[in-house]
Amino acid sequence: MEFPIYKVLQENEQHILAKWQSNVFSQAPHELLPGNTSKGQFTDPISYSIEKNTAAIFKWLIKAADDNDLAEALEEICRLSAVQNSKPSEALGFIWALKHVIHQLLASGKIICPNADDLMDVDARIDKIVGQAFDFYCACRAQIYELRVNEIKRMYGRDAG
Image (tube, rainbow, N blue to C red; front, side, top):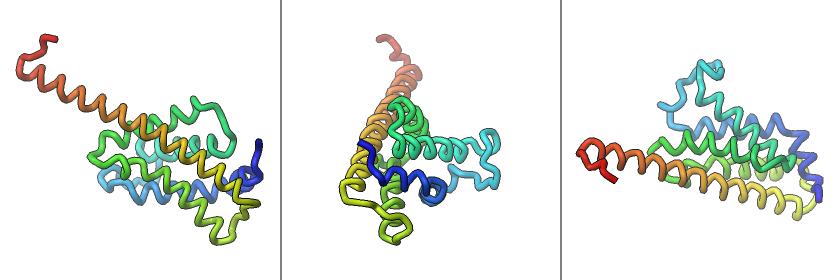
């Protein structure tokens, strides 16, 4: 069932994305983002990746696109977050920031939510994004720990096994 709020969110996509991405960049560690004004794929790959993937996540949210589109975007951002030395709640805070931006716009009256069921559906979809992101983040962290253990084993000659 299509909820009217998705049409409203789609109409405000650029505004919501701009606020959300600004929030994501303000939360990122300063050493992670070089501060380039150009966010090209080769001049600032991290910012480029964040912009590209947050846009893909938002498109999935408003259009109920294929889950593979969501998985690819989430996995790329989660890989970036996993190499940082941060808690999962901090690493995945960018997703809750989207919910916050949408709720702020609703509270300000800039966008109108036809009814509570619409907003509950949006919130449920964002919660689904959080769950998937947590799975990706944990898998990436486990892979990093496994690589570290294997490197220590290799360094001390305990590679048998």
